[in-house]
Image 1 (spheres, rainbow, N blue to C red):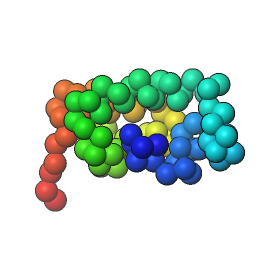
Image 2: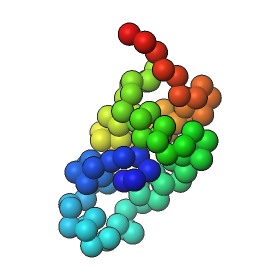
Image 3: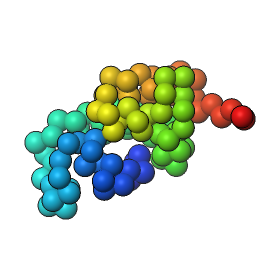
Image 4: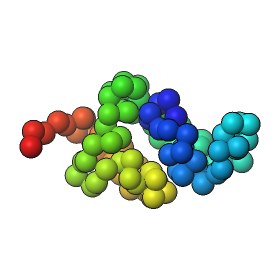
Length: 94
């Protein structure tokens, strides 16, 4: 939640759990959590946590990473992270 700046509701959606599972920290059975932590650890080290949180909600070449997460499209999210690693956090003016 902290690394990506997700709300409780968003985390529940991404992990497909109810709020009680988060409150009671009963997430060990969810493989998505460990995968998400592993995928985002390198990105957080590379660009920093604040930048990663901002990047999550910005449209990239493949769409908005937060939307991919909420749709549970982890492959698309991993692709988003690959683009972030290759290009960095690119800001464009409209």
